[in-house]
Length: 562
Image 1 (cartoon, rainbow, N blue to C red):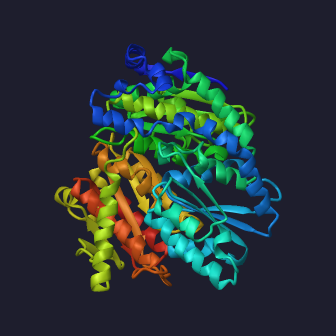
Image 2: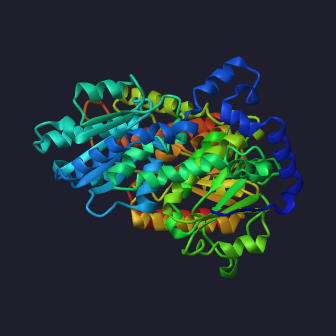
Image 3: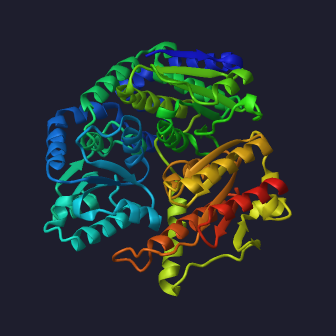
């Protein structure tokens, strides 16, 4: 596993970061859990002390591997055809990476991750309840999305005539959460209690990642062995020879020098890994007006006429042994002569090592940016705004909808206050963007809808060509538990378009006065309101129906007017 850094113009800034890590003996501080390296504030030290369990996660899980294998084999042999993980953020992204990159072993049930409350996505995931098993993963046990999904899953399992519905559920949570108690009361097939000091986005090597790995028949020993080997390397005192500290130092030095767009260059097989890195980096660093903006899935090629990458970029290129480079991106990086980190993965089991490397890097970058990489102070804003809207819906029978700034082809277009003050109307929204800004496309549609996905990627490509800005794409509500912290707590350099559409037919949530469609729209509207309150530039587009061609037409008009 090779690791190389071409610092380019960052040489001096990177050496400064290395010296700081040496002076504070950061590697030693991680080894010994020395808290004064983070802050002299006792309250903050105690908060961080409750978030360092990721350093030992693989050692904690290892003794439970026989139990995990036994569960996986019993489920495989019981007639279960589908396993659906219900979760959000850190509880779902590592399992999705393992599923998409390594895949399900022959003979094991199909595995999918449901981290959307879109009615169409929920229906599709739960199409075979009679032979499905559901993994309910939530650190807090009170997350609204997986609890809503679980209520619908339980209804379907009961209606399918399963005699013991609890036997079709497995829970992963912290001790004494509402989910823990519910799992015991309803006699879930198995309950895994994760260490409370492992934060969600740092939980890939804990039960939140390894239980799904077991259920897919993945070689957990190989994953954890590679993680342990990387952990040893990440305890080396010299940051220049420490693969986690060195990566974090590059990330922070680049951000402090104005290169805050961490652009991941990944081969197709590893593209899903970018989603996990995106959450880890964005949520760990995007606060107090600072932050690193992860750019994944962007693609493009200079020779095809794309604009070269700007001087707000730093590149991390990962190559899988024996596989291709990232399609269409290597030429752009070389042409731009950008600071670049190059990583080689010898095999897919090295994902375990990469999980630990990047967790160490995120913590290191947080230290160098003088922020707490283990909290997420702005995530609750959108949650609270969503709850206000849902309460209003319960009282009034409808969601309160602000008056749009324009309605074009039936599409309601609403601007935040800051955007409204700066432009003539919604169609000119893209005039707000110029480098080093970035564009965020935040979409509340089924993630698996290929027709919409093509249109969204076209729009992203066209915005980049029009504005010269880096672009991101996130599906809601997934991104609320990922890049949402960065959008509201990080630097105010983002321009966001939130996209929603009318749902027909909708899907009720058992036990709630609102439906999945109402919840989805409330979450989008709540996030829009949070962006408005934090002075961000955003445009909410609400389509009257789910029509990719309509979205393409509106996108074309935005490009022409921008």
